[in-house]
Amino acid sequence: MNVYSRLFIPLLLTLSLAFAKFFLQEKSKDWDGVFSYLPKINTVLIILGITWCLLIMTRILKDNLLRKFDISQENNLKARKISTQINILQKVGNFIIILIGLGLILLSFESIRQIGVGLFASAGVAGIIIGFSAQKAIGTLIAGIQIAFAQPFRLDDAVVVEGEWGWIEEINLTYVVVRIWDQRRLVLPTTYFLEKPFQNWTRTSADIIGSVFLYTDYTISFDALRDELDRILAASPLWDKKVKVLQVTDTKEMTVETRILVSAKNSPTAWDLRVHVREKMINFIQKNYPEALPKTRVVLDQRKE
Image (cartoon, rainbow, N blue to C red; front, side, top):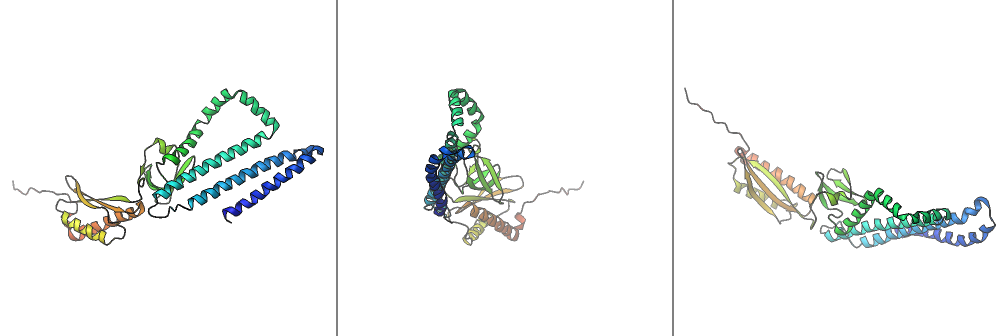
């Protein structure tokens, strides 16, 4: 069942209830007891039907807009940006529609309307009380709207949050779901991303640079390492042929630190490329320069007393 066919049933029911309202208004004057409440029930059902139709219409509008932006493509920065905004705006719209629907249902009852008038007279005090009690909920809602427009992250962005590396899977008004690399889900409130630092690896583009660190003895040949890196990357389809660097970045008492930088089209590919390069470089050192593996030197004093 597509989205348009889903709209047919609630729309038909709402129109039927609207036509029935004229009949009930005329006949209910002669009814007593439980039957006298039928017009009120009919009004509530009409409001629910209209709310239902509006929610489905927002879904139709969202689907039609997202159809133009495919986030499955490699160069999907613009698509992810628009998809994030549309998804959050639809949730905001749904929240407002439901809130207005509930308000209209309450106002349709005379007794509740009179209570509302009384509360309105003391709106100053009530507003302060409600403001304090709902401060966190309102702040979370506003944070969701801020994320939709400021966009510190988007759908399918690669992020590092709470020491975990994964992708933004869902962005809701009150919480965000991060899909961790091992298929776990990290659920965080939207306010977290506005109050605490986190890493976004694909903020401006999907491609990313990965690093590999090697620790060897001082006797290693760096020219040989560079030649082997060239050979490994030339044979690997994971490398996007943009970044290829091998540098000595640190020296310690026992070892030399060598950093390799390689680039890939996206973060999952960069991870696989780093693992591949690390494994092949270690194999190369083991086979060709076993004496250059990290070692501890001991000098024995053989002088005779």
